[in-house]
Image (cartoon, rainbow, N blue to C red; front, side, top):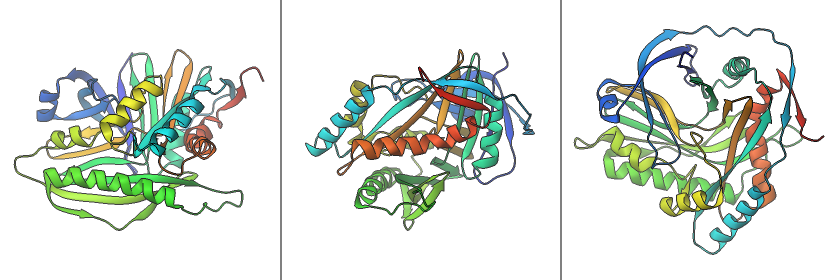
Length: 335
């Protein structure tokens, strides 16, 4: 099977197909560039692809609507949330991100879902990756690092509110402001170690489908003895998708989530020695052997509740589910 990545950057019209030719080492990739896909687990190696780019025309083809069966939610998620809340209350962690999977059984109209995301998620990095017998699709609103020359830019994206029944977004609370502040401070500290002229923008908001997040931009100029990949190793995973303190949060996730995040909450994007556009792999799915796995998560801080976090993950899942429903009827298993 031909391996490729089709992608479109946020707020752009051009859609690019990156045709994968081979996987190379990090040291070779740093010199020549290509497309990178890194997992959440920092102990696992990233995939460094080289290849060539062509233009892609996204054409929505009519398909017959079919059924997908949704499996029941894993009850382990609630116990993980309860444990995370306890860890925060006991000051073992300031923040930890707890995620869960949504599993759909049946043949997915993957390309049609991707094309719909292109149309409806204009401010996201939308991608479709075909690698052997596995398909990954995502629409991420979060910039990990943009690099132009020696200038770096990262997004602090955290805190989530959803729309209420009247179509208006719910108000922000101290819980969201606190969660976002932790993320901004951690990213800024990494920049201070590797960059000069570090600037933090005023706090704003970023809408992503039916939810919105608190947002700040952190910028800086790489110091002469520093490189993008040195910054990446300290920045990933950010508190937005792991927690604080980072190492303790990662250990907690490994012990309590009880499933492999794979490339969810990793990062991906295009890189060359002169320029890079890398995004956190959020709002994503994996499709293999007629099983579609969606990944969603939320940050646990002081003030978090199970019901609040569960509802937040449901709202985040709608980014993908709203597109999937246009081509499939989703039935609950044993309904």
